[in-house]
Length: 449
Image (cartoon, rainbow, N blue to C red; front, side, top):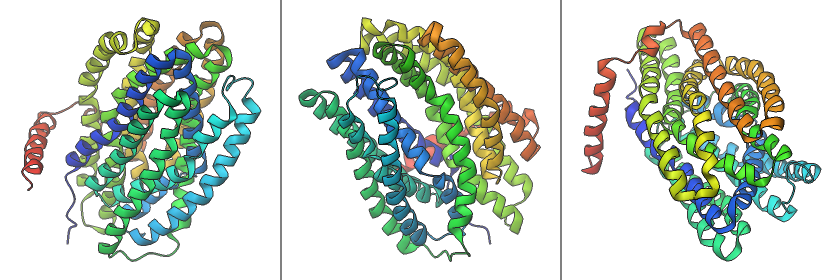
């Protein structure tokens, strides 16, 4: 008997709301910081937030991807995954935060110049609860509990926005940074509530050793993500070593604005991984055919391509209108920097969906291969272009790195699936019609059906 699966477009639609939450929160907070304490304060916040985010990613050991894969294939029960992941989140998070403090101390006179250790410790305090809430996210997604996943993410983003904005005026930069641990704690407790309810109705029986399998899978994704952070985050860190906090603040606004283009593809990426894994397992057991599994994955890729055009137009409007209106004349270079970043950002949006399909088919090592190829080239571009050209070199190097990652993702996706390029990259009329179906589904939600 076939398992009844949730509407993938509905999950992606909810994920759009979820993916947009952190961007809206971070963007609004950066506007408040820019208006209250200027580009330098904005740059310092970007640096400590980057430090906390990188630390959490390193400390996670990729378990988020491993949890999603194992739970979606019905080899790890919700209750067991919940208990195990929260304990690991606390342990790994504390170790990661301690290492993060040591890294800060070692680089405080270069990369983190002008930032006090108290500010860094405050940001790094978010790491243990942040890992717990991310693991909760992974379990809910694997079970296709899209509404619960959205509620969890929104609770985190809303707390970051409300606490950060409320405290930035009386406490300045420290007030904004307090929002990082506050949001992580709220997210972790919301995860406890939601997973307790989900665990009560889950009837999955654990197969032998789900944690070691999840770690083996996750470490491959973790290594790939660790290297990918060179592409996504090291431009800011290297720029901070060779330029002023003002340059970092101006460049970070361009990054924030162009990152909005990733909301839609990341939504597809988020829901495609568990669905691809589930369908792949179903194809092995005969629940679905291999052609049906391929068709679902190919449709998701085509939607990623289809959404590139409106995403590009929207980002162009943000850069031309929102930057001068919201941030003011001191950030006029952010607009031009954003247009340098935009081509690579749009290509990588498609690459993210392709990578999710690769990992969902059980080949996370290919995403690692992509990172191993791209990372040294990216570092060469950063160190070759940032010292002489500052933020302009960072934007050009990042855009080229994003584009190369997307092209390699396409190569490896074809190796895994053998799906024809036309079926992947040329949207069909039925793909456009899917959006009318989503509109009807949204009306059904609104009416409580």
